[in-house]
Length: 131
Image 1: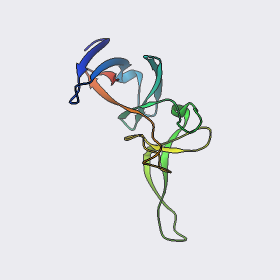
Image 2: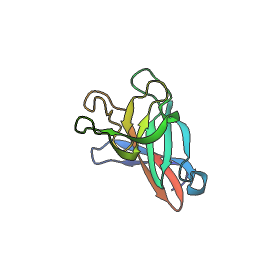
Image 3: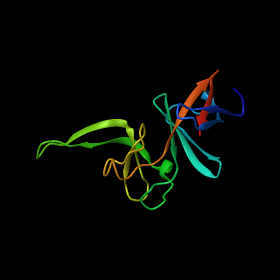
Image 4: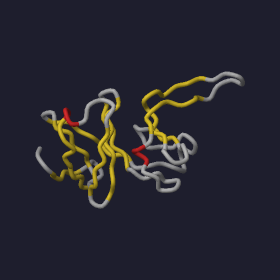
């Protein structure tokens, strides 16, 4: 697969594969922002796992992918502080809203606030985002 190509999804919609670069271009801990069809999409390599997420926070439009990837405090008993989801949460750089990298769901309001995520595939050491 080179450049951009289209394929059909299970729902009959068309996806286009857009080249991000090679695996060597995006080592663990790095990220790259692409502009695809007028949308900014961030591709992040978190400990060797690749995620693609829209680079706009739904709260106030911040460049979400400039935020930190970390974990968060989990629900726990009074007086306990349980940290979890390490490396699975993207925190908005403006107001601290937290989003799951895998699903794009907000930790604050998972049913009402989310950010679009995209599938990432690797073929012959080349990274592609399916939009």
